[in-house]
Length: 577
Image (cartoon, rainbow, N blue to C red; front, top):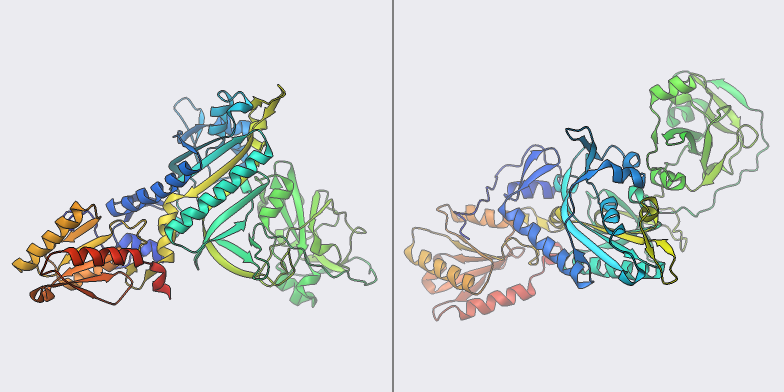
């Protein structure tokens, strides 16, 4: 490929709406172009990287015996209603109607489609286990698409689904996927973590995320340096002890708190610490209202709440709903005298004489106590674990970091097969629901994550495994006949040997070519310039300042040997050392 023919429109200036390094460099390097918020076109360089990522993922899927299929993006609502997720999935699901007013979705995932596929095809335990996968576009109506490819509304994903006759068989395949995903990460050359994760709208009883550490990552990771525990903040358990207060219970008293709504305002106005205030949060789900109680200095973990109540449709009640149905502004809602289901975090259990909303505007109760003043229906760990909290395994203080999720694997169990009546006959002649697993990998976001991981102030630093091209040959003066001739010869020799090479034959300055080469991130650059008068060309790794001079007076043998040596030694992690 010649640079003058390659459609790679690089940009000198940073677009005004970029938020991350990967977003900036992929736009400026001519890899992607924005169509609308969260929707992108992949230009030739971007498409080459995507295909290489896809091929790595495909090779590792085939290696563990998964079989590739391709399922429709457009999915009928009936299947999602069978599984119960049509309402549960939430507003991220892109829904539409056809001309006959039938409901469809642009698939964010394919559990329903694949379960419906196999339930009429797999009849016997002898056909199990079976793993099917696809690499396809997915759609999610993100409320605020951001970070370029990292939170998009249209994205490319590998999703796999396994079907089993026993939990032991599922466990075996789950471990195979763990190893396959680890190999993918290793082939990308990035550091990664395998963390315990919440199952969310996908469901199931266990899941793990494969995360690349990054400052702009949206996954909050808690980890223990002593025992190796790693989990997302949505999943991390709190197993520390709470103080059991020994105060005498005082009489419940309603006090005026004019214009005081937030925890901080109530704390200051009443002269009590936030830990002596209980937040009353109203949620609305399939079964109506639920009041959630948690200590005022702690944050509620919504993922834990949804998992505990088995209702992914739960959302916070709006101020308008609270005022209409409870007759009180949102800042003064409380548990005393309110007839709704109450779920409380363990942090509330040991409190005495605490503050809650007064169920009247501009009022709070002080000296509230349970079960005297209100009843808690269910106790559960609902707090968000933060850095410094004790490790649930060994008790040491947890550390925190951020990361970008690339892979997520789930043990689904019989969630979908039971709901959709997908059964097989076991060895005893009994009909049983399939035991299932599912396994996702974000292909398009991998491209962005690698850029976040490997870059410098000049541009991207691609690993050899997914670089759009391995080598760029720069002819530094297109008016110099010898440079032009030798540059063309090197390009031809490398092309004939199967090297992925680009010839920069544009009539622009050497500095312009160097900047483009660094921005695009070609792993190795060959300079054909003034040193050619001494019979020498220069080779340079993308992340190194060292120029390696190679004499070509007696042919290109030394050049090819040096290039192979550079490829063997090439390691973008050196850029961070």
